[in-house]
Image (cartoon, rainbow, N blue to C red):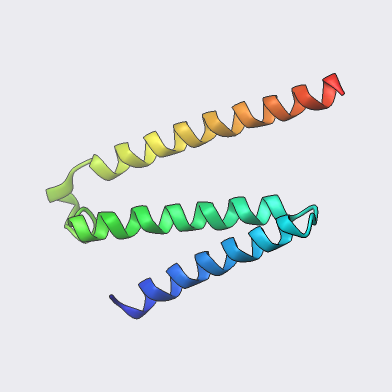
Length: 96
């Protein structure tokens, strides 16, 4: 493994652990930091998997539009999940 890969992996794990500790201490920012840490970890793991699979690092003419299509799918799914979660939270606040 290369040093930047290890550094980013350790960074995301540290953020995740800090978030879990803050959540256990019932701090208001604990859940947000935990989600950030988990998101970082998942994102970096996907990146490392694509690097290991050889998807990244190839000239654009050889890979074509695969990365753009993959990025668009991730963007649409992420936006849909964010909208769903926001609506769910607002519904909980209204019914209280």
